[in-house]
Each structure stands twice: as structure tokens, then as C-alpha cells.
Length: 135
Length: 214
Image (tube, rainbow over all chains, first blue to last red; front, side, top):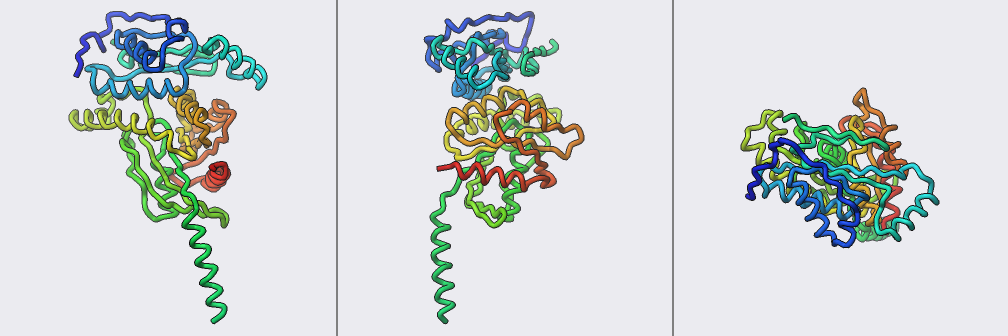
């Protein structure tokens, strides 16, 4: 069991912005490792863009494995808000082509935080509410 | 005599046809406590007389993937054979302290949490093996939970047909429209697994989706 004394004891926390350029050239392994590394430091990540669906499940799977191995780690809260949810087919198609050229979906924002700090992320199509745990 | 020979001949042909029929792997996915096992139990009980697993008010009751093979569903004279796969609820966080509220002992709560984390990993691993997936959502909960979106995103990427079930429509404050609005590209069927309400529409949708399986 890896000990992490800081987890779960909040004196403050950091919101870290992670531009897509920082993960663009990383493979899935490296992306997940980077994200979980930041989260374990009691930080909330605001990621420009979003992960691929298989990376999201990988993130959940790796998170579960870490709960067993890192003391005080209880998982993550995760939410993705997308700016193009109600667009029509052609707009979505154009957006898809643009995203493919740019290398990521910049119309989306992903929020990931440690469950020891973030109690809940409530999401409506165009609004995200972050509820923090009482300390 | 001749009639009997004919009858036996056709019986043999039909039973062979049935034996060769592909068993469709039908997975039940969703967040914890949405009613996946309740629905799988309802179907298995109706068509095999046996249940697939236990249900509980305490989340993460199903902590390992459980199966029921050769479940022949008979709907309006049509028959299909399924392998029912009931999976542990997928979550992004598991805290043993949440189980203490249900009066579990600390030791048992910790064991349950450990098994639940392993269950989530197992559920994810099984995604690749499904032919058709039923996403079971609790109609009284916020459907915009990222876990739901992540599972569906993965199924779409794997080209696996999806049916969304809005369970617990028997509860007063239930509202299927919220789920329909969250997932406008999918069929949403409102049911009550507990009371067996609206299962006809569920079976119809499952048959329709299963026909797409090659």
C-alpha cells in the first residue's frame, strides 16, 4: 500500500489547467498516468478537450486499481461538458473534421478531481456545478 | 404411423435448427443500484425459473460478473436465445465509509469496497465481449452522470447496439423525459424491474436490436 499523507487532508487545493497541447502527443498510458499524477496531488484538473471513450474507461479502471493501492485515495469525480451537444448532423460532421485536423475536441472541457475533495459534479447540458467536501 | 414419422422428422429438424442458433450475449450495464440485477432476474425468472443474482439496497451488491446461459426468450411467438451477462455497477469512486451508513461492520465495508473496485475493472473488461447491451439507469437519478456517457461512448466506438432502460418508473418522482433528453439518439424504454411493468416494450426493443447482431 502506497502512503500518501496529503490525500484527504485539505488545507487548500489547486485547480490546474491542462491544455490539450500537453497531452496531444502522449499515448493513452502516458495520458492516464499524467492525469492521475495530478489528481493524486490533491488538484482538480480542467482539461482542454476530452479523452477518447476508451481512455475514459481506462482512467476509471486505473482509478479503481489505485483505490486498493494508494492509502486515502477514494477515486475521482469526472465530468465532460461539450459545447456542441445540440448541433445538427452537418455541424457535427464539420466539427468532427475540424477536431480531427486539430488533433482533439476543443469544444469540450473535462473536469477531473479527487473524490476526497470533490463530492459531486452535477452536470446539465450547459452547466457544471462542483460540490466540494466539507473539511 | 406416417403422421408420427412426419412429426418426429420436423421435430428433429427444428430442434437442430434451434441448437445451432447463435446465443446472443446480452450485457446489463450501468451505475450501481440502478436495477441491473433486478431486471436480469426478472427475465431469467420468467424464462428459466431461476434468478441470476441477489439484489440489495446497499450499492455494489453485484461485485463479480454473473451469467445465465441459454435463456430462451419467447416474445409474441418469436424465440431468441441469450446469454445473460449481469455486470457490477460502474463507478469512478468507491469509499468504504459509504457502506457504514447501511450498518455494515468496518471490516465488511472495507471488503465490500475492495471487491467493488475489482468488479468495476471486470465490468470494463467485459465490454468487448457483448453483442447487445442494455444500459440500466435509475429514472430518479441525474442521467448526465459521466459514467453513463462513458459507457455509451465505448459501446458506440465498438459498434455494439445499445438500449437504454429507464428503471424504477413505479417511483412517484420518476421522469423518463430527462433520460430521453440526455440520450436523444437512443431508444429509451421505461420499466419497473421490481414490478415487471412495461416489459413487453423492453422485449420488443431487445428483439429489434438483436436482429442487428451478425
